[in-house]
View 1: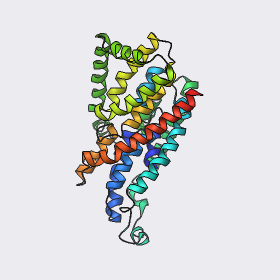
View 2: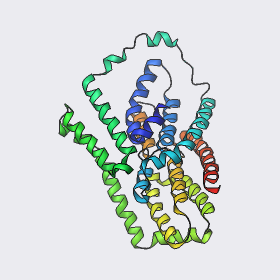
View 3: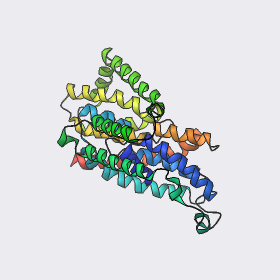
View 4: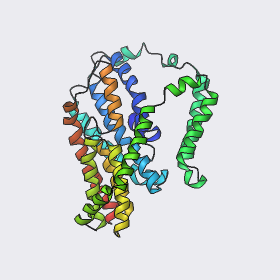
Length: 324
């Protein structure tokens, strides 16, 4: 639940970087297998990230391209995310019912803990949380203030840079430069697909299947869910954004249900395999470094069936909301 909430508020990639070392620290202290927690965190990082505009990279791409605001994602995606979370919790509780057992009494283990010693600079923690709160306020009110999400996020980041005791050089070394250049290359590639007519052909295939909103919505949802685990949900979403725009230009199909179908399909579809989303890869990398590698097929046996169940729930939800 903590992973899901954090993913909705600070994005699932950042959450994965934060929650992985915490997980291993807890597992070592309690002398338990971290695997059930790692797989659960992968699933809930993607589920929680589905709820908001900033929670998962596909939603950021969709929001910027379709001009959908932060609160619109909350209103539309959060209800189904809550239902899906309860479903997945029950599934995981059943799957790991034999592993979730402590070897020692919990009270004895916790008696030696003193979490207050982990906070090195309490004053900076308070300032950081205050600025983080202002950034979240900026996200939720950006449609009123007309400030872009990037402006709000960078503004909070610059203020923290002025207040932090850490040098700028150290901060810049921690930036995920490979990820940034990955996005640059990705958009160049998608632009090339548009210019050469590939995007238009894909849109034409969809239009030939159906020119009705609801069937196309379901097609996009399930196509996104099946394709995202194979090619990663970020490049797939970037491609499908151009497809949906092309479909909207060629037909009278309502675009908004298609955007929500793409959001739910790509974000939840990332749970299908270990390479389906960036958060999966980060948590798997941490697991390997700590001597607890997550094998591709071991995750597939759990993640793919659960992903199909969540997409079925999302299908019923979309048909209920947009078919009424």
